[in-house]
Image 1 (tube, rainbow, N blue to C red):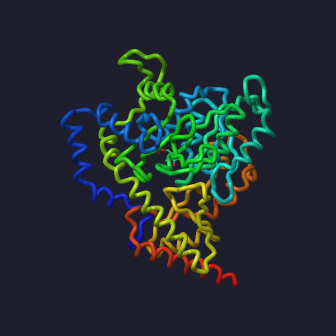
Image 2: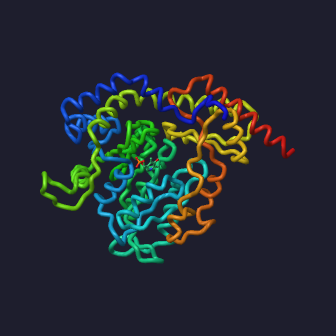
Image 3: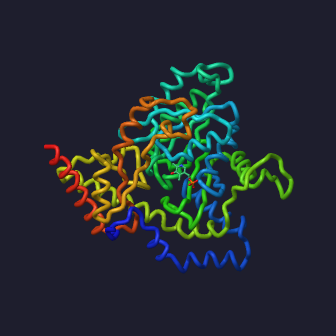
Length: 400
Ligand SMILES: *Cc1c(COP(=O)(O)O)cnc(C)c1O
C-alpha cells in the first residue's frame, strides 16, 4: 500500500483546529440537556438564513430530508411529476419518488454539467401538453409540478433562465444546494449577485461531514423566503405537530439535533474563509493546467458564476488508468458520479435507455474529482498537478 500523500479530503485537520470550541458546544448541550431543538438550533437557523441571504432556515436531519420536506411543503404528491438532472447524487431523485411523484430527467449543459435550460424548455414544449391545470406529460398524463436544479460541485445552475421557464409553465423551483453553501449567481433580472438558497421556492442544504459546511454526523437545512412554507416544514420535520401532541398533518422525525447545530454554528464562522481557500485552490489548479501541455478539461465557470468548489472535477481520457496512477502515487481521487441515475438499477422502472441523455453519458466515464479541501497545502497541490501531468502525457505518448 502506498502511504497517502494527498488525501481526496482531509476531515481530521479542520476539526483538530477547532477541537476545544467544538467540545464546548457538546458540553453546553450536556449541561443543559437540550438535545433536540432549543437555543442552539434556533441560533444556527438564524445565522444560516442570513448567510444564504434567505429569510428563513429550517434545520432538519439531512440534505435528503431537506429535499423531501420541501417537496411535501410545495404540495407534491402521488400522481405528480418532478423534473431534475440525471447526473446527481441519488438523493435528489429519491426525495422526488418518496413524495409519491415520478422523477423525469433533462440533460445537462456540456460545459457547466448543470441543468441546461434549453433542454428543460424542450422537454416542456415537446413532451408535455398544457391544459387548465397546468402542464401534463403527454405520454403518461402525470402533472409536471416542479423542477429541481442541482447546483453541482458548488456551482449554481443558470437560475434566471430556469426561474423564467418555471414561471411560464407554472412550476415550483426547488434548489438542490447540497453542494453549494455560499455559491453565487449573477442575476441579470435582479441586476445583482444572488446566493444559493435565496432564489427558488426553497432550497435544500446538506451538512454531511464532507460538504463545504459539514456537521460531525448527519444534518441538513432548508432555506426559503416563504413564511408559510417555512412554518409547514417546521411541522413536517416534527411529526406534523402544530404544538406538542396536536398533529395537523402526518410528518416525519426529521429534526436537526442541538449538538450538531452547536457544531455547525461554530464552523459556519469559518465557511467564508474555507470557501475562499477552495476558490484560490481551484484558480491555481486552472493556471497550472493551462500553462502545461496536458489534455485535461478543467472546470468551466461562466462570468455569472462564483462557484465554491465543493469538488474540483476535470475530464481526462482513459480515466481508470489515470486514477490508478494517482492512487499509486498516494493521491486520493473520486468520481461524482460514475453512473447517471437513468442508468441505475434502482430506476430501471422509469424506462429510460442508454442514449437518452447524451451529455451526462459522455461525461460520466471521463470525470475525475481531484483532491480539494481548504487545508490542502501548496506543496500537496503541486504534487497532484505534477503527477497528473506526467500520467496524462505518458498516456498520450503510449498511443503515439
Ligand atoms: C449530499 C447530497 C444530498 C443528500 O444530502 P444528505 O445530507 O447526505 O442526505 C443531496 N443532493 C446532493 C446533490 C448532494 O450532494
